[in-house]
Image (cartoon, rainbow, N blue to C red; front, side):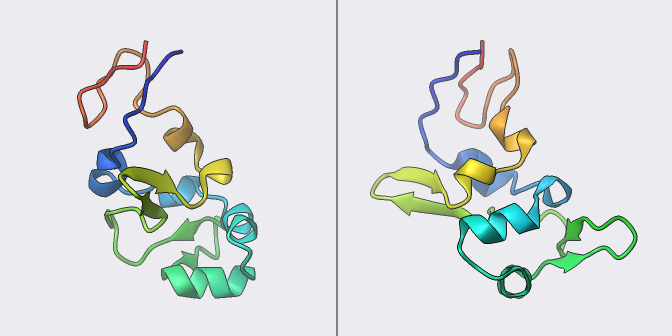
Length: 102
């Protein structure tokens, strides 16, 4: 599927991140942080029943891993970003900037 991302960051600013899809162990490793330090730094808690991470404030935006490199949006955890981010915006669906994945 083709998608020429403009790297504007609108998706990350407006949608945030699907916390339950984020593998906090991989994200912590990607950021070279200890897991407990990562969880505390980003305000995550681990659900004791499911093991998934949660944020105490649902729907938090922008994504805390969004940063800007000059004029482009960059994901600080790009290699380990959640699957939903990898497939955004989905076939035939417009992204926040109006682009479509074919």
